Amino acid sequence: MKNKKWIIWAAILLSIFMVFMWYFSNSNKYNPNASQYSSNLLPEVTFQNSLPVGSIVNLPKLTSISGRIVPNTGKRVFLFVSRTCGSCEYISLAIPELAKTFSKLTWVYVEKSSEPPIIGTSKLENLYIVKNGDTNLSSLFESKYTPTFFFIDNDNKIVWKRRGFIPPDYYTLKDILAAFNSNNYELLNKTYQRNLAIGKKFPSIIAYTYPDDKKIVIPNNFIGKSVLIFILHYSCSTCSDVINALPQNLKNSNDVIKIIVFSPFSEKLNQEALRFAKEFGFTTIEKSVESPLIKTTWNDIYRHDHGMIYINDSQFYFQNLIGIVGSPYVILLNKNGHIEHIYSPNFYSKDQLKNFYASLYKLIKNERR
Image (tube, rainbow, N blue to C red; front, side):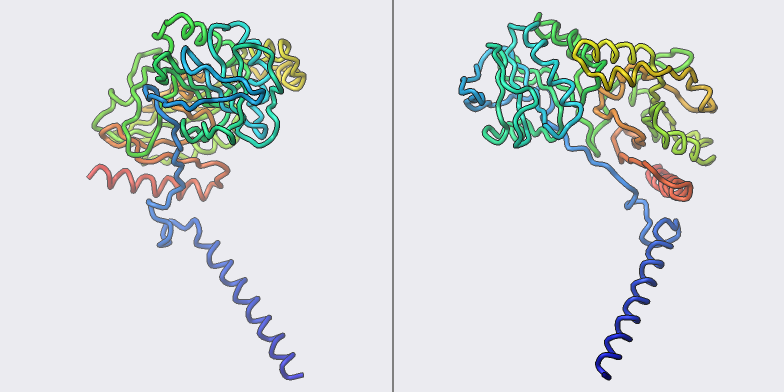
């Protein structure tokens, strides 16, 4: 009986201790004065980059799921997809049409999951479906994301790549494929996805400010100062919280350049999405796009703060170039134009955002020394 009472009391004491530890850890979790909340523990995203454009790929002998040998010469398009990826479904159903249109290109459709390919089987001579489990191509290309395109030239060199897909991309992709098909590499060089990595210099990108349309080059025009680049979307509910929480010390600092890359609601993109939906029978996209368009403009939502640089990226050009199409993201560049950190302050509370910016400001001040 005594042992039973001892067990009960031990369980009660343990429960009290666990509740206390839970309260203590959560009450200090976002305290800027707490020792565990230091600048080096800010939430950071390190992107896993695939092989960069210009890389030579030593391709193995490839066999499609139907037993056909994939040509190892000529211009080829490699597309990595997965059954678990929603965007992959969109592009997969359009691939046969693209393969027909660009019949001189060899298409290699790489299914990364163990499931049967979304695309099924193909009767097109220039379209080959392979399973990544049989080929290990994702390791060869260091391709961790789907969908991802790689264009390979006659010398097995990557001349263009792009990660991600939204329905309006289909029509841009057709222009890029036409350029690749006709050896017009000027368009390829303007549109391929750059590798973004912490510690590396931010890729040189020409942009135009909003609303005055002045040409700037990032980061070249801002060497010598810290730069904060905000990637924001019109439809992102937390993006307004992220930018509205920006404190005065960062807003007013002449040593910190603030660049806001925003993607407003674009009627053109919606019309292209509607066109894509009708062409390939995606009724869910069609219903979504045909809903009443929101007429609110970006300036109705965000005040045009003095000292901030705005870039209207309604066509996702800037974001596709650097390989970040999601939001919100905050990219910190040091005074040499190198990437210090990439943050994803998504679903933060007001207190969390306050502490985030407090630590970020300390980090920038230390970098300035």
